[in-house]
Image 1 (tube, rainbow, N blue to C red):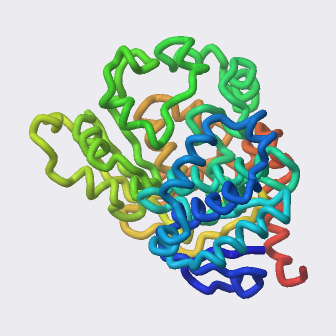
Image 2: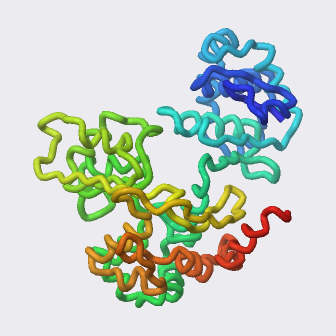
Image 3: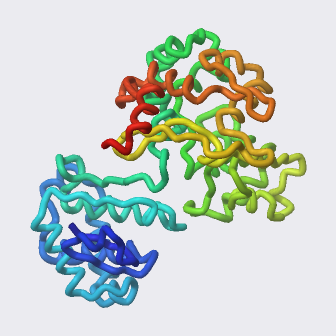
Length: 381
């Protein structure tokens, strides 16, 4: 086990090799390893020939620019240790690379992740048992959030967007399939993947004929998300300024809210743009299930009532649906409880609906009653 970290962590204490890099110098270190792999002919040539496109360009770049002296200058790791790590990776295959927010939440997070994947491709470690690029979640319930469908290319549970998937969920939700169909501008839009979180800028700024939808995006919700780890900051600011509507849902004014409030260029600014900040409750102000990277699930209890004007995410969703006229369909399977005199869907009922509909990833037996019983008996395990 090799641990690469600017800090000597509890994990590093258990490592066979601990490498201390300068914070943010991940790419220099990864490409330094690749330099030794290519120099010694340790790359998986057959795998690259059969399954990888463009590795020759990577090799040219690495051999020309990421020599051991440049790598040491950038990340502070001496050549002997970089070579040792490369040799260990070569001699212990298949191997995996595991990372969390330490790679992704940089301004160049996308590029660092690409470099890790490139190293694994060079070694032939992608798509094999015991290999892979294993991205562990950095916060509780990031996995649970992803499982229930915020990705732009899928319904909950990674069912995709084909008509059969829609019909499955229409049946599970008890909502008429034809009614769901009518909520879309066209039938084609219903089965078409949306814009990814790193490309929403283009959905606003790009020429309409180059976008696969009828009009450019005019409204944007940033819900529990901020652009800290995304590149193209100037274009992002321009895109925010051009919107008709921008809504930030977060427990506090995030980087997104700050960017929206900053004065932009006059030619970019939409004079009719409306910006709203909706204060959301923290994890301590609501209850519900949370899912770890390995999909083990726990039940989280509410510690305090939501402070000030903050509301839980599911209350905000229900109230938005009320304003938009489809709360009856959204919340038909949920009982309501009163919080601050307002209706809030009961979290237990939301999980029961997930249990009923998401068969692909093991949620079916995770009832709220079972999870709560597990938490009550945690001290006995």
